Image (cartoon, rainbow, N blue to C red; front, side):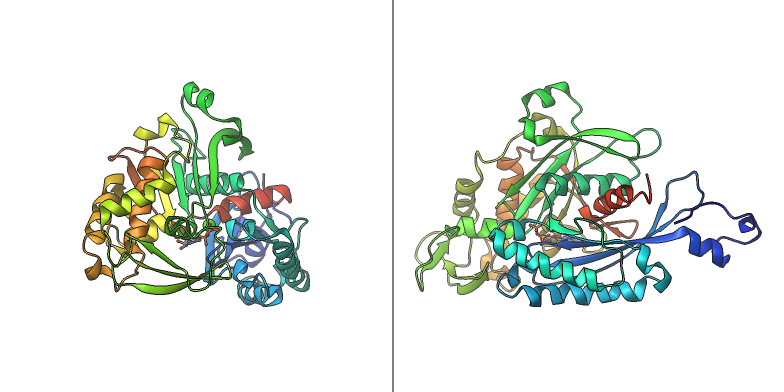
Length: 406
Ligand SMILES: O=c1[nH]cnc2c1ncn2[C@@H]1O[C@H](COP(=O)(O)OP(=O)(O)O)[C@@H](O)[C@H]1O
Ligand SMILES: [Ca+2]
C-alpha cells in the first residue's frame, strides 16, 4: 500500500483523479458476533496526504439475527450467516483491493457463555469462510474478544467520532453498552482517588493515535438485558423441569408464554394471583442487581454516552426519537418504567418484557453503577452516520497492527 503523493495529483480535483483515488482509498471489514445478532461493518478510509492520518470516509452496515451462539449445534449453518454478510463486502470493495482488505470477526458474550468446544467449532467454520474469501485474513482473524477490550474499543469509537481524541480541549466521554448477555462501563478517570479505590483488573492502559490512556472499564457477564430477564425470572442456570413455569411481578398478570434462550425452552408468565406493577417488580430486580457491581464515586456527576439496548428501549417507549437519539436523565427511565409497569395491559402489545426491561435498566443505572437521578445520558446510535460500536475502535487497532496506519 503506497501513500506517497503523486506529482500530478494537484492537477485534478481529488475525487476525479483516478490514480489518486485508487492509491488512497482502503477498506477494513469487522464482524461483530454479538449474543443476539451478527453484524458486518465495512469501513472506507482515505489517506488524503502522506503526513496525515487516514480519514474515515464511510461505513456500510448490515446485520442478521439470531447470533452465532444460536447455532451452537450447527456450526456450519452459523458460518453460512457470516458468508451471506461477507458477500456484501465482495460487492462493496473494488476487486483489486480485495487482497489488501483485512477481514476479522470478534465474538462477545454469547460465545463466552457457550462451552469451549462449541464456541471453537463455530469459530473454526467461520475461519474457513474467511480463508475461502478473496480478502486478507490476518492472524487471529476469528476469536472471542476479551470483555475489557469490548469496553475500551467502544470508548475509542465514541470519542473518536465526537472528536475527543484529536486537537486541543479534549474532554473524553464515558460509555455505557447494554448487550444481550453482558454490559460494559468505560471512562477515563480524572481523579487520583478513583484510581486508588478501583480494583486493579478494572484499569487498563493502552496506546492509540500517539496518546496513552488509562481507562476504567469492566464487562459484567450475565448482566446483558436478555441474561438479566432469565436471572430475574429465577431461571438462570436452573435445571429446568419439563413444563416448569417462571413467574414475575414484572410481567402482565394473565400472560403465559414460552421463550427459547441458549437452546433451552422456558415457560414464563405473570403473577396470576399475586402482585404486579413497578414496586414489586423493582424489588424483584433489586435482588439480582444490588451489591453486584463496583460503584466508582466519580461517575455520579458526569454524563455518559449510552447505546445498544439503552437506546432501543428508550426509542421503543418514545423517550427519544428512533433516528435522532437524545439526552435523558437517569430518572426518565424510572418514570417510564413506572408508567409501563403500572399500566401493563395498555403496553402488552409492545413486548411483554417492556416493564421488566425498563425496570432492570433503572435498577442497573441507580443501584448497580450508582448513578444519580439527574445523571445525563446521551443516547446515541450513530455519529456522523457511523454506528457507535466497538467495531470501529477494533478496526483502528487492526489497521495499526497491520502497519496500514499508525
Ligand atoms: O452496530 C450496531 N448498531 C446498532 N445496534 C447495535 C450494534 N451493535 C449492537 N447493537 C445493539 O446491541 C444490542 C444487542 O447486544 P449484542 O447482541 O451485541 O449482545 P452482547 O454485546 O451481549 O454480545 C441490541 O440492542 C443491538 O441493537
Ligand atoms: Ca454487543
